[in-house]
Amino acid sequence: MRLYQYQIWFPVPVFEAWRLECDRRSVHAATFLRSLIHYYLLSTREPAPLQNWVWEGKLYRGGLKEREAEKAVIPHGAKRALLRRAVLRGTRSSHIVRALILAAMRGEYQSLPLVTSGMMYDDESRYYTGETRSP
Image (cartoon, rainbow, N blue to C red; front, side):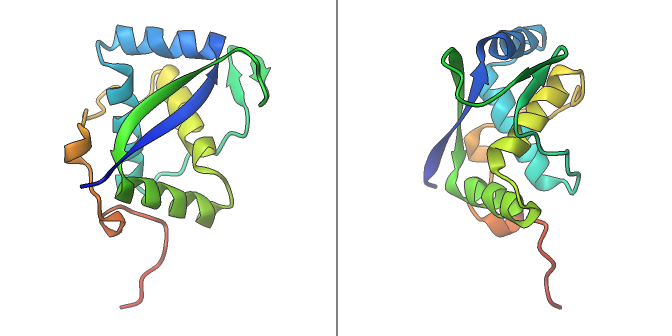
């Protein structure tokens, strides 16, 4: 299985809140991020994609000088499935992952199954990509 290092950039205040949420849940941040992506790819639920970070009533736009990155190793198949799903929705994969992260920080996904990269699929067709298939 080939692996890809997924990376998402946070404004510093949101990154600090993300890390506090991970500590509260007693989970490594990379594991939590990978598990959110895997859970999303297996489900048909579509969060509203977010072009900007919105946290505690503050809007953080792109191009921030002070920012932090979170990284998680995922299979290339999961990366392709995430990209296909984003393209079908007319957005970027980072906008979807941003929405997942913020939902988790608001208390959603309390019983999220945690996964390692080896538990994820390298075959994107095993994930829900939002495409309709012909019989």
